[in-house]
Structure formats: C-alpha cells, structure tokens
Amino acid sequence: MTYAETLDYLYLKLPMFSRIGEAAIKKDLTNTISLCNFLGNPQQKIKTIHIAGTNGKGSTAHILASVLQEAGYKTGLYTSPHILDFRERIKINGKMCPEKFVVQFTEKIKPKIEEIQPSFFEITVAMAFDYFAKKKVDIAIIETGLGGRLDSTNIIHPVLSVITNISYDHQYLLGNTLAEIALEKAGIIKFESPVIIGRHQAETDEIFIQKAKDKQAHLEFAEDSITQIKSALTDRFLFVDAKMGDTPVNICSDLNATYQTENIRTALAAIHLLQTKKILEIKGKAIQLGFSNVRKNTHLLGRWQWIAKHPKIVVDVGHNEDGIRKIKEQLKTERYRKLHIIYGAVKDKEVENILELLPKNAIYYFTEPQMPRKLDAQQLHEKALQHGLQGSVYPHPKDALGVAKSQANEEDLILIMGSFFVVSEIL
Image (cartoon, rainbow, N blue to C red):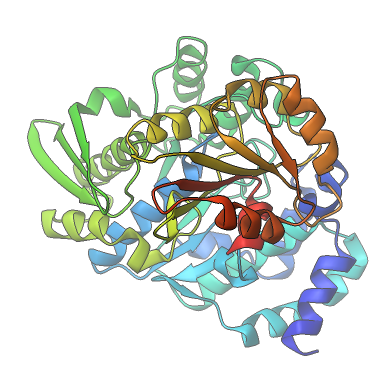
C-alpha cells in the first residue's frame, strides 16, 4: 500500500471516534493489550510520562517535550487528535514519524486488525509505542485520548503521571459530576509512580489524594510546589515569574496566551519533581530554552495561534466550558475594534452551556466541521439565537472565513474556534 492508501485503510476500516463518536470507544484495554503483545510489548521498553486532564494536557505535553528535548533527551511525544497530518500524533524531538513507518507498521499488524477489529485510536497508540521503542527514545510523553482509566494509553507504568485539571467534557462517557470525571482521570495513577495534579479543586482533590494513597504514589499539587505565580503578556510572549520550591524562576514562553499560565505551572511542577526525585536531569538553561521554543521544537498547532495580521486572525481549539472561559480571559487582553467569531461544533457536545458562555458582543459565523459527527450549522445557529448570539450560517469553515475577512476592518479580530476539526479545515 502507498501512504495515502494506508491512511484510507486506517480511517475507513477502523472505528474512529471523530467519525462515529461513542461507538468507536472500546470500554476496556483488551484490544490494546492484545496489539502490544503481538508487537512484543514495546511500551515496556521505554520510559514514559503519562498526561491526562480535561484541558491543557496537550499544551502541557508539548511544553514538557520541548524542555526535555532541550535537556538533551531523545523525546517521544504522542498526542491526539492531529490537525493537519496524521503523523503529528507520533513525534520524536518534534519530527513526525516517517510515512514509510506508518505503511510498514500497518502492513505488519494487518492480520491482528482483521482478527480483533480494534479502533483507530487503539492502533495509533500501539503504533506510537512501537515507533518509540524501535527508535530507543530516552523518554516518551504520552497524552491520553479520553478519560484515563480505560484509555488505550493506560497500559504503561510511567515514571510520572500528570493530571492537568477536571472540567465538564464528554460527560456521556466519563460521568456527570466533576468527582465522577476525576475518578476516571485518576485511573492513570500507578503503584509507586509519582503524580502531579495541576489544579486544586474542592470537588476532586480528595479523589486524587485517596487514589495516590491506595497506589502508594507520591502526590503533589502544582499550586503547592510552584508558588508566587505572576504573568504578563506581549504580542509574542507570555512572561511568568514563579518560585519552583524555594528557587525563583523566570519563564518566557512562546505560548502567548494567558490561559497557558496554568499549564506552565503544571509543567514546572512536573519538572521540579523529576529533578528532586532524580528521575531525569534537567538544568536551568534547558528549562528556559524549552519554554521559549515550544512551538519551534514541537510544532504545536491550534493554541491561540496567529495565522494573519490586519485583521488579526487567530485559531484556538478550545471547545468545552472551561476552554471557553479561558478564551474569554484571553480576549480581555486583546485590543480590537470588532470581534468576529467563526464557530462550529460536534453534535455530542454540551453546546447549550457553551453558547451561554460565548461573548454576546461578537459577530458570529456559524459553521460545521466536515465530518459525520458534525452539528449542523443551521441547528447551531438556531440554538445560538436563543442565547443572544447574532450571526449567519456558512456550511464550510473556509466560506465563513472568506466572508469574515471581507467584512472585517484591519483593526478587528477574527477568532476561529470550537471543534479541532473546524480549526483543521482553516489551517
């Protein structure tokens, strides 16, 4: 098979969450274990850091990857979903795995695919483990897909687990309360493996503390180990001053959004623990360079990413309640004449709650991701009207952007947000 044929096979043959939703989720680890047994259990041959959480886990994973890369480690990074290229999911030192590897891996594992009918995500997880083991990475940072306890990535025993925060998303799979969601995320905590929790939350703290106690795992809250956080923003950089333990640290990050302050704190807490537990050696210069070159080192996409000026056009993959609140905080720091928002969603989102949070003083361009799980743009528009949001309907995101650009003044701000897949269409 060619690379294009291989992707067609993976996308069309295997149940894929982005295409069919909940039906693609296998609610146990049997298939992933079977796939990895077939491959010789590559996940047991690599050192890993496991990251879960509702929001910020992708940014935190990329930050840590950038720092460890600057520290001289051959660093694997597995994240999902991809935005432009399937191979974004599997990188070493910021470089995507080769097309040839994807083809060869798929050919090798085809008999197992036919036998057990795994999901798309289960295959990509096994592919990542196999690639990282073959390339003998020093450390691999593994981001969960959904939840944690039953996530396909949860067959590793990491040197460190990180849980960024808990908020409402995918309730139909993870639970209807923050406590229920936290219990699923806490499933990544392993026996005697330390864990960082990114945010103190009254509803969830005790769940993590008890789970860590049960697993005899050292637990730290990022807000306790990284203190005196202050941040300032320019067009290009986010500056963060903090104390890492007793040591002052000054961070200049190219992740230029105020909401990244929390992810920076979580990453600093993880780095501090890796240092103090002597798990990895990370010097101050690597920390400084790693934070200032996250986009350059890892090619992170879709997080308050500028794609044009005059008018300023920004894409952001924030798509749940907590993510929207963070975007609204960022908007308060921006200077613009009018705000234009291109927004699309998938049909299994709690869209009513999100629409209630969106800014009322924006001009809206309601669109839809180009996928079966899309929420029809006309239906989205009708729901939005009930929340006082005014705008028009454009079935394709690129059409929405074309109209927004034609209507915007040079001093306006155009924000493309919502589904990963709307951002993907624009980029």
